[in-house]
Image 1: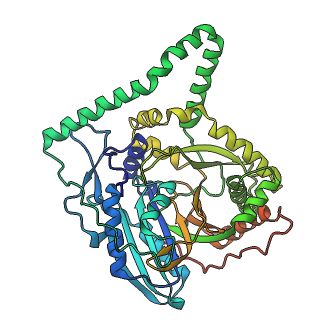
Image 2 (image 1 turned 90 degrees about the horizontal axis):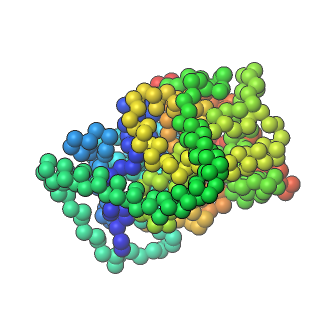
Image 3 (image 1 turned 180 degrees about the horizontal axis):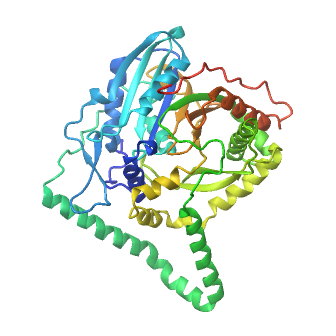
Amino acid sequence: MKTAGADKNYLSQTDAIMWMVESDPLLRSTILGVALLDRMPDWAGLVDRVDRTTRLVPNLRRKVVKPPLHPNLLRWEVDPDFDLSYHVRHVALPAPAGVQQVIDFARHTAMQGFDRARPLWEFTLIDGLEGGGAALVMKVHHVLTDGVGSVQLAAYLFDVAADADTSDVEMAELPDAGAGDFLSRLRDVVEHDVDSVVGLARRNAPSVIPNLLRALRHPQQAMADTVSVVRSIARTVAPASDTLSPVMTERHLATCFRTIDVPLKVLHDGAKMAGGTVNDGFLAGISGGLRRYHELHGAVVDELRVAMPISLRSQTDAVGGNHVTVMRFKVPVGLADPAERIRALHELGRRVRDEPSLAHTSAIAGVLNLLPREVIGSILKHVDFLASNVPGVPIPLYLLGAEVQRFYPFGPTAGSAVNVTLMSYRDTCCLGINIDAIAIPDHDVFMACLQAGFDEVLDLVPTAPAKQPVARKRVRPAGG
């Protein structure tokens, strides 16, 4: 089997931003996946499966280092002291342990930063759950992979059949741990810089002459296109001096994890009734919940600022890795009619995906990397909420014979008041909600509002089944 991401030795400019801003703990880029299993898988078999996966996905055995004489460049190097037992753990929660205790364990795990002297991931198998169930909590740094990449990585860990036999699969060779001396590292950095310049020239050269001829033939249109790109970039990097929400203004390290299950088909059909997509229905549910929450606090808001990942992944990209850019834009929250809200979000989403700045993501990130970290941090902390929709797996998955019943994703708040991440699994949209427990102190109230927001979308389908209740016990915020 071909190894994944073997040729990606350097972090992208976007990844470098995520790495650098973590000097502020509020801006950590930790993502978690919680797989709930119907029974306990074999521990020794799991360790072997993860060992095999680390040999196929090189960055699972690599750590991030700074190359010599290049302050804004970061590269992956194989950890010569890699210790699998540090990264793969086995615990039992105090009985009786249910789903919420697993989610609470995941919250505590997410709050702990990574050891930057090691590869940036930790897997914990939890047993002793009610009914003989188990769970696998997977913690990775965002520079290691994005949401779509995590689904791809899951293909190495999980099976599509309960009785899958992998005993005849050969163990891949270990990656070369040699990092070289100072001069060889320096030479590699110079070669990287030269390759980057040559690659940029090669990518742009075919369009230089056609663009020049087009500008000579249609100078006014060329000027208009240039102005459009400049304005788009300005919208992308424009600083935000304050939150749009008058209620969710505080930012602290205390967090609260919650979950919601939404039937995928009903969400799809509800959004389609208004001419939208699943993503439009997802955003409409969140914005509807936020409108209700603000109204309960006596605040009327027309718009809130969201940060949402836009996937730039292509079919030629290696498995894993981070291939997203984050777009900030204002979403309509004041529209009480869910159908009208979906239509407005659908048009807004089209405009965001058509932003000319998306073609210049790497260059924009490179410029931002030259700015003081505090400047970037101030921009992120004035985002009201984060939302991410990750296409998941439509078929059952198994971990060494144990069936995956639910798969909840939790993204970082990254300076916002709340992150709502959706990952579809089989016929269910599994929503992981990461709440800043000080920005939103009344968690039960907020969750009821969020559930009501999604109910508005589901109710657009006349034959919608009974709503999924928020059947989760209260989670205490860290430090609270």
